[in-house]
Image (cartoon, rainbow, N blue to C red):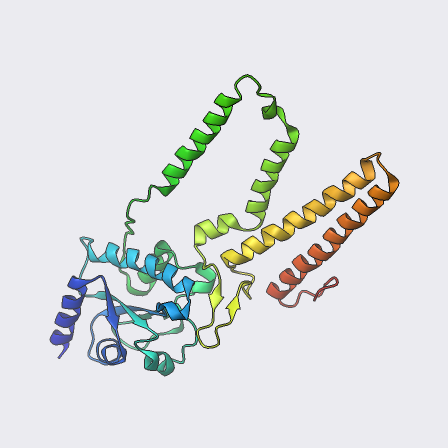
Length: 300
């Protein structure tokens, strides 16, 4: 019985790195004993009608990891990668009381899965390297991630250099714009907004853009924990910081300019409104993530 299960899993794995499973296959080859191999299962919802963009992104990373294991010299029958789609195994989701996707679980060779056998996707993200580290902790199987060549970054850099070079060439007789303080200030602010909104964290951790509950279809753009964030959340924070900065610039303009008093008063009121409203919004987001934070301003 065990030899037949291992042989069947190896045959499926030879065809594709990630084995697709329905309810019957899951119960027989993952849940039911005997079993001397570990199984990593991604529970997902990839059908277009589910509109789960996070599932597609996570699936790409999962495929990279599974391919890295399948074509490595250390590949063996001690670990297999599988996937259960909601539309092919809804009974499995119900059996495990699972109400969100994607979810990664490790089913050990012996015993039942423990709490640590469920990957903390919301906190860590779903990058292949993070999944490989988690698998190494749970199975002692080391997987070196090999990604297919991606030249998009190189092409984008080459286009940027070409654009800047072409602009400098066209303006070679008048390069005064290089000394434009406003231009450099705007560029510096863009970098500051990107860094303070968590773009570097997104690049390192690879979090999902947002989270959609597969049961009620509700989409969350703000993560409920202070230990994680969504990509959409960083975009929202970036816009809020930009709006607050614009308000401060208008307040400074109203205080230092020597124009019409009425116009300066209007600029002052607009700037004050921007700072008050968007800072209140920013503080409310901070309060929702850091539970127990006592202070709020206008917006709770």
